[in-house]
Length: 109
Image (cartoon, rainbow, N blue to C red; front, side, top):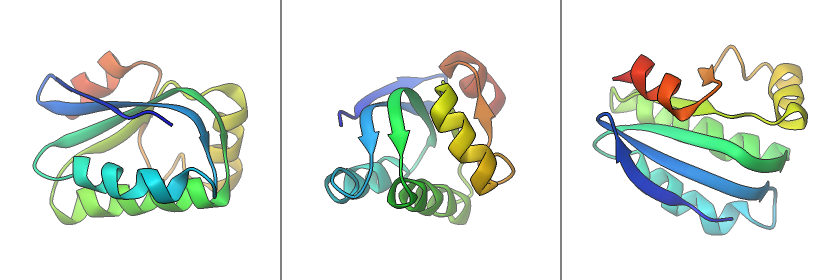
């Protein structure tokens, strides 16, 4: 899992790669929650091919942290398998999703 932090249109863009599962979430959680401080956050999940319940939990935690700080939070670039997990879990109603980082940044900015 690699988190790439780059500022785009007043929000932080983090591109995640690999799997969001019980093996990768503990190392990534603190870094992800640190990114939610001070600016809006867009997570580009185009490189994520699998999300487990542990991965969904940390995404929900980041979304709640952003909301509590009155910051924006969104994900983009969902692969079909990840999109399906979001649909089944009801996360499409909880976390704003966009096709591209640019669309997400424009909507949040």
